Image 1 (tube, rainbow, N blue to C red):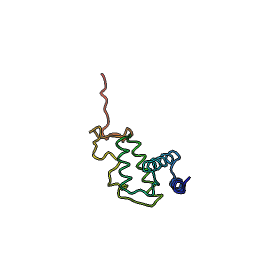
Image 2 (cartoon, rainbow, N blue to C red):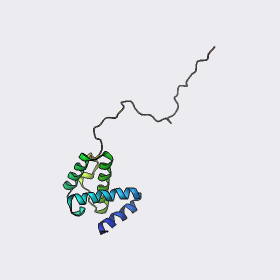
Image 3 (cartoon, one colour):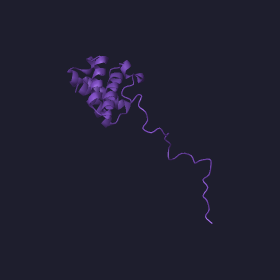
Image 4 (cartoon, one colour):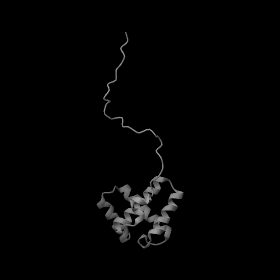
Length: 124
């Protein structure tokens, strides 16, 4: 196990990530490293961005998010690099301008009762 991988595992434990989250994040960094054939700490922001665009083109949304957040954790927490790409304003991997499926506002089934009581007509 490389010192960088060990450090990332320690960082994830300190952050309180579950073991499955740790596995997913490690897999994301490993896939990035294999894609470029070198250590991920030697990659530029543009290379990581291009890699994630490629992942987005060929994978499901959940895979994209797992890769994005795993790489974000690695670069921010393990390497201490806070690239512009990983800031909220980048808009990746959210849906961005997608509209809600339903134009009707969603309400919780546990909402407060109506101020107007429901009156049942009495049958005579």
